[in-house]
Amino acid sequence: MLVTSSDVLRSEVERIVAAAGAHLRVVPDAVEAGRYWDAAAAVLVGSDVHELPPRRRTPAVMVGLDGEGDSLWHLAAALGAERVAVLPDAAAWLADHLSRSRSPGPGGVTLGITGGCGGAGATTAAVWIAQAAARLGVRVLLVDGDPWGGGLELALAAEDTPGLRWPDLAEARGSIDPLQLVDSLPTAGGLSFLSWPATRDQPLPVPAVATAGVLDAARRGYELVVIDVGRGTGPLHTVAWDCDRIMVVVPAQLKATVAAVRLLQELPPVEAALLVRGRPGAALDSSLIADAVGLPVQGRIPELSAVPGATETGRLLDLGKRRNIRRFAAAVLDWLGDDLQAGEVA
Image 1 (tube, rainbow, N blue to C red):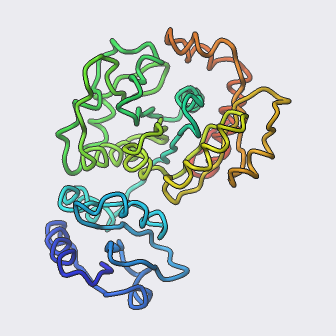
Image 2 (cartoon, rainbow, N blue to C red):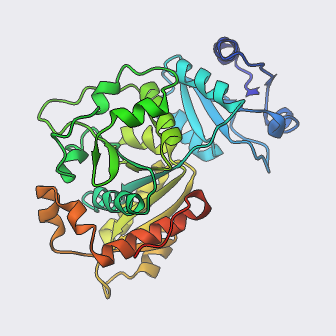
């Protein structure tokens, strides 16, 4: 079902739905949409729609046209849309999404990790969470979501490990075979990873439609996908929207807490929680930070003096073997609950 009164959007979507071999019902507004919403295999909401019916169950994809800018993403967040498709660039992704929505298969959970402020420690947390899941036998992929972050592979000391990086997938279109993706990605410490290259060269841009296709295949190929989202506008408006849940890393400091509050305005409408980084007895305790940000605290990242050096020398995986780190990561995996069947961390 498409909810729109725009003839231009209707024409664009009709061609895509035809290519996907599906049938389309078009309704002009939220009132009419409420009658058919939960019977539809997929719901598309045009950028001209500014409200949705209450008590809906089927998630929606916000569709808009190139040139609508950030307003489209903010509208999607306000309405609670699950995905955003900017046409015509996302036509291939949307056709694939609609094809799979008629016969959905099993898929893993995608967890996003972002920093409430610069230098919060999101990359460190993402590495340790992915490592803990891999130790439990979970098929896990660690994804570098920020092309300007310097390359996640450096933190893993795996820059020379063979396998595909993001620029190698820039031309990916449509449905990607998840098994081929799994086989083509490098591994370190028992987990797969997809990184931006750790080089001095300017990163080759990867279109949003290619990113979406890769992350959809990752969801189908792995039981857990952990994305180090970054804090840039680009990643927050692309990879963050493929996350089922998001955790925000906040140092136990006033300035960091204020920055985290501002960041929340850019996050997609998914379940979120905080990871507080700091020593017990810090000036701002977890309850104060939770009240200020408006999200629950799900875990405390241990403050270790060895972390900066381990990050520079690629020894984060070695630190992740410590008992207090494993306890922290176990709390995050417990938060995923039924979405991830994880055992106990010894």
